[in-house]
Length: 102
Image (tube, rainbow, N blue to C red; front, side, top):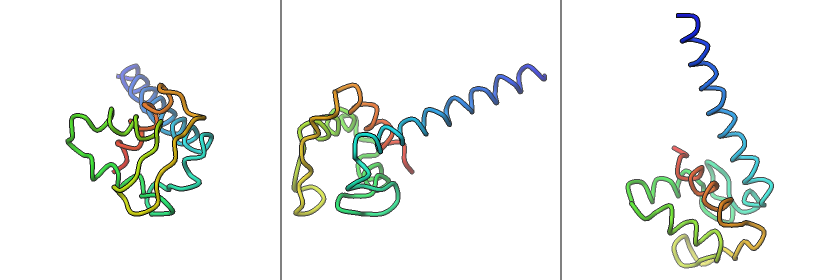
C-alpha cells in the first residue's frame, strides 16, 4: 500500500513539473508577452483557445502551424506574428499545454 501511494505521488509530481515546465517554456519563448492563461491580453487567453478548439481532431496540428507561422482573423484584428524563436517540437509542446488549460 505504501509503495502504491509513493508511486501515485511521484507520478503526480511529474505531471505537475511537466505543467510547470510548459508554463516556463511559454515564458521563455515570449508567449506571455501577448497571452495569459485566464485573461485576454493582446491575444486570447489560453483557456479561451482551449475551449474554442476542444474536441477538434486537427487542433494540435493547426495551432502548431499558427505558433510557427503566425495567423490572423480568428481572435480579432491583431495578427499573431510568426515565432521564429520556436522550433516545431517546442511549438507542439506549447500547443499541447495550451489545449490542456481548462
